[in-house]
Image (cartoon, rainbow, N blue to C red; front, side):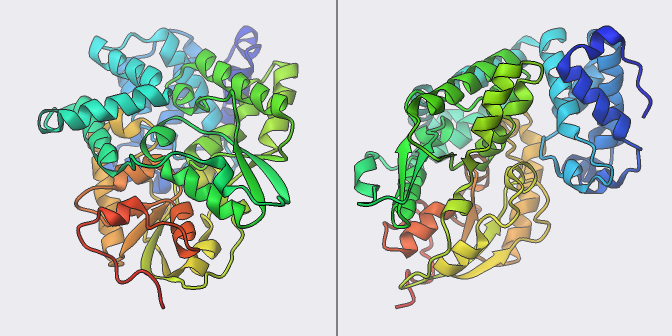
Length: 435
């Protein structure tokens, strides 16, 4: 593509990166077939090719974007399946990041929509506020779950998460530490998952402890910043990234860093992009990103003494496929723990969670959830495995099989507790072990 950015605009590292990606695009359209929103609507403006044109015009004009452009850019999931499919290696993420930041500073949204985005940014990055909001939503469940639009979508997810959350356990690091560890890994505690599904990190610690890996919470780190980044709040995202990097550097004992939500892991790997044009922080961000490990890399397959008699549908999050770029989601480890691990038809299609997308675009997200669950239903599974808290919450519900993190399943197969989602399921799975 030919671009028309001024030299002053190209002095901005974000615009310069976006411009390189724009020039690489040849408008072949291969990406459109992989885009969930385009497949649903058939509207070129809801596909990568159409959005790229709108984002280019918006960035080149360096002015307030049109409501039409914002509407269709907002409907992008950020799943990055288009980037994976692109034969020209166009980095769609760099264009979308620049566009979101531009919209955040140049476009005035309707007050209610802007308020919702601000609430998401403030509340969902703070575990105490997430937990408080979920508890209030559960208390007022008969009322809040009937609310329309974005608020109702948020309330329904909060109520379901609060109903599943374990209340009688505390995270005990020492109980999971191996006597003679062979490796030390820092655990980023995260925010939403820490508040709504603390059992995931406990299970991960026990699984890794059996493999000689000491998993310790990284003190001083907070939210990874992914939510703020995807909302276009660049300064907030950078501040959270700096906090995480500084905490890891200060600790100094760990060879790697882990976060058990794949959406957050993908963002940690992208930290260097946040600090383009800032040599000191870019170098520190790259050193940090080089230490990031996915749970499936650390939880090496280990044959369970009594594998679970479980027909398991494996949902691989977009963030794992296209961000972390580990498309198997630790299938080998799950296969050692469960009797059947089944790939889901249309596995490349996003489920509609996409961070805060299911709250900001509930109608589109619901259609994608229905499509994903329909594909899962063809497998007749006992449970679903997903490595991302957003997907786990979005897919969960009375109309779906229990949804669990791979760490919970592997831990259960190796002698850990039965995951809470299975304990609360209306229909028990077919047995617990093969014994």
